[in-house]
Image (cartoon, rainbow, N blue to C red; front, side):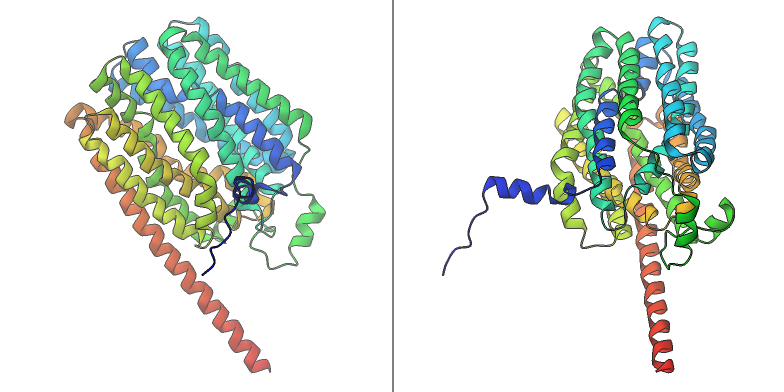
Length: 433
């Protein structure tokens, strides 16, 4: 019996990179810009530690400030979605992202935590304006056939930069905290320069939108306002409501996790948290490609449901964490959940979004699904003060588990609807024959 020929390392590498080959040039530009931007995300992941350890604010007060920061994203994203569909993705991104980065600069010179919080809140508002335009551009330059590979590459780029950035941020927090703000601003500016130089405007023309009306594509333009477009796609609304529970769970890796690490390990907790965030990014870099290749055999909504199971296990075990190794094991598991969700959620949404409303859908749907993220920190802050951090993890695990069950049920409903529609079409064909 002959043995199968072994693949050389070069061929294995080529096979693993296959989903990322042959993509539009704009996707590769977005990848590089995302790496640069991700390498400078210093402030928000460490915001809880900045306010509690550097400025001495209470956990409850810190949770409220983080909540206000995330709330500021809401009006920004609603405005950004409308502007992106009306004036174009690139123009909106260039202006709003510049303001987002510039507002970090004065924070490095200030010692008033409330004034610093005010600048961060304003920065997050403009980040909210930027995001719908940036995501709509990603949709514009991809198709359903290459979207999973393109989106996973961009997601990989974010985490590649993030892996570098969080190691730097952990040491900056301890030795040069002002440079957390200035470095964040520099990275935003460098990323914006790449967008300005190498990315064209991608908004579909009126002619392209009109032509799409003659097709049966789920992405064809919609003749109506935002609300009628949303009503025409109720499955996206239910999907967004269910994934808000994921946001509630995931937000705790930025709030309860660093606080628990500091409580257990003192000043070493900041470095431990930085290494956990680096592990998260390394897991994404190492496992995104094989997970994407494996998950392609399943429907995106089924994959997103499975992500909730991984969140429930990964975050739930932190209720029993007493050693650094359990923190690392937890981070590994919920990082796999993040990969599965991130590489399938946006594909599902994109494949059901009308091309005429991409900016607005990318404002409203993340806003709905982001409610859990926004309310997570103040709720967790109050739970922590009354019952302790371990109780937070029990609540988080239950939240993710309930959402996973709901998404699995929604997926079965969608699959049943498609089968009924296919059966009806077959019956019509037989009758006409």
